[in-house]
Image 1: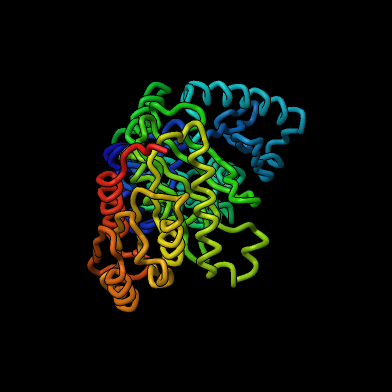
Image 2 (image 1 turned 90 degrees about the vertical axis):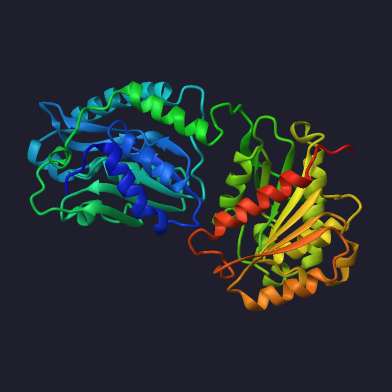
Length: 435
């Protein structure tokens, strides 16, 4: 296989990954410099944020093109013991090379990102992208860096690699995706028509374009950060994102067996962020409480946590005056509707995805917030439960079915449809609050 250039290779790789990673909360990490143009196309295909995974090769002192390992951010170092044995490089020489390369790495981090903070990878699927794999040392270091930064899953994706690249990578990646593994592999460049060296300016430009596409170019410190909501006497864990000029914040209530790291909820949250809405994804239970499965289905308890967190959110200076909406999935939808009847909560709108509003049965007639129920067309039991619940609602409401979608909305295009419906519902019904 011959690629015209890195851009074409990235588009083909993005097409392969689009269905492979559908519904997951993805961040794409490109290896500077040659991997970034490829990663930029992958990020666009996946509608995911793009960042760099900074790695520097550790070249043998008298033969720099021969890699004896690699280093990256967070103090990660990968050493090829076989190369060290064959070349006779000692610890002192290795340390000298590493010290120099770390200086270069820090300088490039400042140049590439500027004032932008690194994209958060914690709890997400990190797709590590390069323009190809040769020895595998750099790719292994990149995967370890992503792991050290808290990624839940590592996918290494490249256009071309040797036949034995899976062996070379070992267990550093959870999944390997490669378009071509030719038997006659000698160098990455032989599979590109144009393999011109990528410079720092192109890397910076690609990152800036991706940041603008995902609304991060104008981000200021504190807009996207970990928080600890307080509900009553309980301190919880969450992530608050407030785009510049946000007119409202959507608080997510996840379903049983899920958490603030839910890839589906994070997918929807990113779509709302792009529409200028803030989002708060948080855990409704503490770690100790989650061990008791009865708590996961205790709708009054979950609703109490949601209402308490809403009160905490409204007291924050950065959220003062913003309308609050609820997005509930599965049992979280019942908690959202139950909490919506509390006088202190007063959400401006509620959206339920594949929810169980029937579990909020006695509270349904008291809900006043405009409510959208979204159900998969191939989820007949939940669809009937939603129809019965809708009949009990007295507020403005609508039931939308997504054709072909099952309960988890894993089918191609179904979660995108949920995101569009939620975005339109919230933007139509949410205006700055006056409290």
